[in-house]
Image (tube, rainbow, N blue to C red):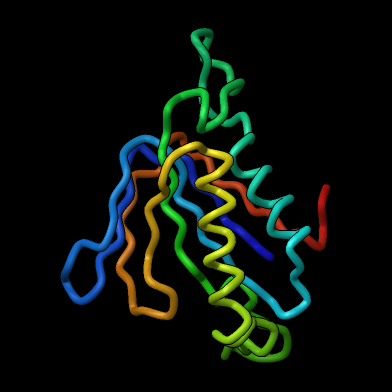
Length: 150
């Protein structure tokens, strides 16, 4: 699994000109899934996302996680995180999972994040043409790959 995690002042997802979901202070998480992903990857990534200390404490140091600040999470599926660009200018998405595998993993990720956060999270719609708006706070943007757990 790959994720781009952005600390946001607010974020929203719109589908067909209809607001699907929005959050205030929290994390916008773009998630990509590949066929080799396992539930261990999902659990590791969900825990990392919820426990990343990327929010400022009273001294202005990044010491708090999304739970500590009462923040929200907006999770959006993003198959293009597995784009292969080597060799040409037209990306290949062959490594991204097909919906039959990716949708159940995405749904499990939603449940895992909600369980760790202790409240519902906002989501996009898997496979939809979505318009994402955000105000990146910081900016703070972190990329994670469960195949490279550094």
